[in-house]
Amino acid sequence: MIMKKLTVLLACFMLFALFPARAERPPDDARSLVLDAMEVYSWFVMNPLDVNAEAPALDGALYPVFDDVLARVDVMQALLERCFSADIVQSLWDWGAYTAVNGWLYGYPPDESPLARPVDPDIADARFALTEETDSRRVIIATVYYLYADAPETLEFVSECVDGRWIFTEFPFFW
Image 1 (cartoon, rainbow, N blue to C red):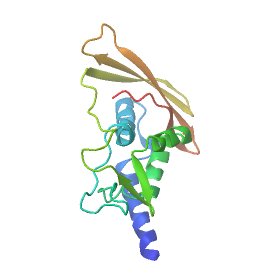
Image 2: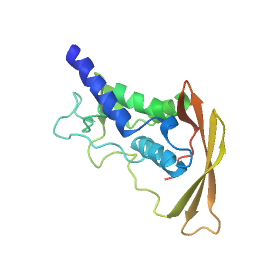
Image 3: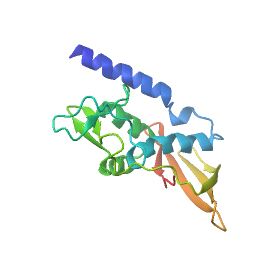
């Protein structure tokens, strides 16, 4: 039991080192703020984490997530809560990219996830600008340029300070 708690604690420390608190980031780093969260979001809706096909779950249909840090449900939940509001976190779990088995994440066999897809190949560029900032709210505008569109798409990402941490409360994923 102690070893399990130490493993979770170590994983959380590693996780927070990989994804520093939003409040620690400079406000002019709008691109990184959005793109870091886009990567985490993408693990649920388009680019699931790799699984270990050599160790199938009990039902044989799903496999354990291969990533040593992110394979635990509680660690993934902590990362999601560090990036997004509770509503967004719940919507990501609802996509069904992963199933929890005894506290571990299991996913689809390699190359069989119905969610897997590449980044939209028609995206030519994306530019980010912090357009509003208060002590409790930041608004980042993303201007997304597509290869075959006459005009770019403008998206608004809202990050709010909740319990001392900056999380996205509006997140229009566009990859």
